[in-house]
Length: 234
Length: 298
Image (cartoon, rainbow over all chains, first blue to last red; front, top):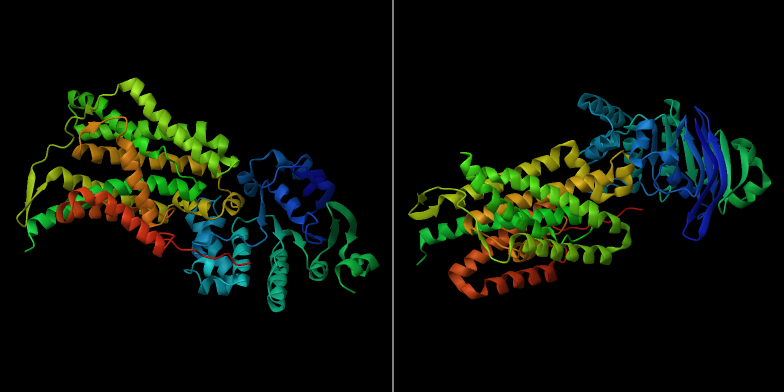
């Protein structure tokens, strides 16, 4: 459903992404792992139009995302949970969720959506009137995921959802990802926590300084000696 | 002994003056909130409104309509000018840093003033009476009816704006964009469109401020927006720049302080005291009265 072909991205004179090609099929969890600065976030930003590409194609179904106005991309069925959560800090939890459904107009549908999110994340319901900036990191991550699924996406891009969270919360976030996936949402997951990411993914890409170094079945990559040495610390 | 009627008069005059500052301050603060830029041409939108009133009030009156209906034309003209300034002058330099934006805004201010000088000449124009209302007796105080009505209009607009920002979808988007442009884009908000709408609303408020101002001081000249704009800017900073209720509070405070200093302390000192209060507030609380910082969680 999502195809990235020969993508190149530059920051000024620095060529950050080199001929990256990847694809995500309906129903998969695909993960993109790599060290800090490898270009994982840049790839996601380019897919959702936050960063301009130098060359290449990004196709969601038949839509060329590089030629789509960034604010229209979510209407095509793709939501993005950005690195660092990016909740609206001085809006309440509930208002944040409403903003997630910005592309919809029916107030009743939005209410049903919010109820669904609250059912999945009871903690958010308890804090519905609280300003999002006052939530803990884990709660903000839940809110960021909740806000993204308010748009009823078919595919969800997640950028470092485990960043800065305690090991218990990391487990919780990963079980949330699996739960979201079980509801029929395809997932492209960017992670530094390669072990956790590979354990839930179907396929994986390993990114090193802007190049795809390896790709393949997640379980096989987990047993690969190079991957184990470089990313799993064994 | 406190003279009750003078006190009431001063309150009404102060609130009236404050409501004008507040409406103008809203324009500064909304634009700052969304693109972190001080639109120094904003004061000149009031001048555009003032001249529009001068030229259109006679037409309204001849057509048998009440003079204040001219404000509708002034709102339209100011909105067009405000949006045009944003699109033509500010949007191209948006990525170029705050210094370029600031200089562009100062240039637009000078451009509008000099354009008005060319179009309308240097002599001030007398704006015809906008409201013909009698004095109203209240607790022994004689209050000008026009001051009361402009005060009510000003407060009503602020209330409506607050409801709009708080509860409507567009209002929420206008709050979301300044907090996080990236996340706003990701949820489907067209940030450029929101910036344009912000300029449109700010300019429309400047037109209403022009009506209120001209009903008390019925003169339009090319520099009328400079001092008014500066005071409103101070009001916005005092209340906490970028914060909508802060602009309203700051405007009302500046208006009341000015009138009370004029009436009760020393007429010549009102500006010095207003600026003094600003300095003290900024020393104690650099983000302004309602300003606050919410740290980002990582």
